[in-house]
Structure formats: C-alpha cells, structure tokens
Image 1 (tube, rainbow, N blue to C red):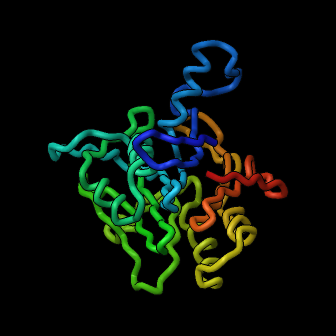
Image 2 (image 1 turned 90 degrees about the horizontal axis):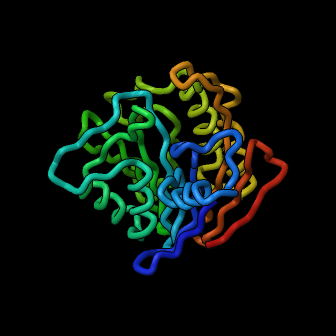
Length: 243
C-alpha cells in the first residue's frame, strides 16, 4: 500500500505490485538496491483512489498487447494509473487523459489490459483497447450505479476473449448477480464479501510457470476517502486506511 502526496497533484492511496520489477522470494528492503526497488512501487499501482474521490483499477486480458502510435506521449499501464491518480478528479477527466496518451503494453507481460474508473459523483466507466483503438463503456443511465469487470472484454465484439484459466466468466457472473440483487448498494462488509467470491486460488499459468492466488481485495469508499483492505484472502481481518 502506497500513499502519495505530489506537490503538483492530488494525494492518493494505492495498492502496488513489486512483482513487475523483480520482487520475489528472499526480497527484503535491507540494502540500498532493495530500498530503491521499493521506491519504484509508486509507479506500479494496480488500483487506487485520490483525494477527489476518483478510483481506478486495472485487470489483464489474454490478448495481444496494445501498441498505439497516434503522435501522443507514450505511456504503459501502471504509469497511466499513476497519472490518473495524480491529475484527474472525475471519470470524464480521466477518460480525456486516456485519449491524450498512446498506450503501450508492459513488456514484462505481453498481454492487454482494461481499466475501471469510478468517482465520488457516482459516474463510472470501463476503458478498453480494441485493435489499438480506445473504447469506453459508460453507464447506461443516470440512475445506473453498477458495473462488473473481471478478466474478459466487455466490448461486444471481443467479449468471447478472456482468461479461461482463472474462470473469468463464472467469477463475473457470480459477482454480477450479487451486485444486481443489491441494486449496486452495499456496505463495506457486503462489498468485501462480494469480492471474496471472485478470488483465484492456486491457479497455474504455464506461460509464467507459477501458481497465482488472490493477493488482496480492496474496497474504496469514494465519499469518506477510505480504503478497506484484506490481504492473502484472510477475510476475517480487514485493515482500514485513509488518504
């Protein structure tokens, strides 16, 4: 968990994954190189929220990585999340930022990604890249307050592409049913319990030659600016943080 307070940006709190810069067994921040590695965490957020109540998260998709070339500044997935947290106050502002950068794949994992955005005004959106073109899925109506996203495309033409290994469609259906039954309105405990139904446990990925399990589940309260966090699927222990 990383807190950020840039001089020319919004304060934020985010969950970052050092796996993407070499974190592994035997890593301890007890040397200068290891401590420098920890500093890199600020550029590796997987989900987060800023002081304006804008939240963002990213999930991977088993598809060819995006490589845009529209003459805009270049950015990769985690750097884009950092830019959004630092500079965007609403979903609309975040979407405009997405459109003003050329997205590129993370070369450590040659996959595609999609993003989920939500803000304190009740707006939300999903951002996907289809054949190197951005596609934004917006809320259906002003009263609509729910959107479920896992590891398959929401864009209709590619909705058949997803992570079969992690059973993405079943996880989506389970969570979507719970969210719809609640009409998108839940307590923190209810939201965390919903996330517990979407975990991956010892899922083996041959390409990476490793087993992957759920690392954390995070519930962001966009009004109170708090993060409720469960780590390692230990849902009987919830940690609370604030910006």
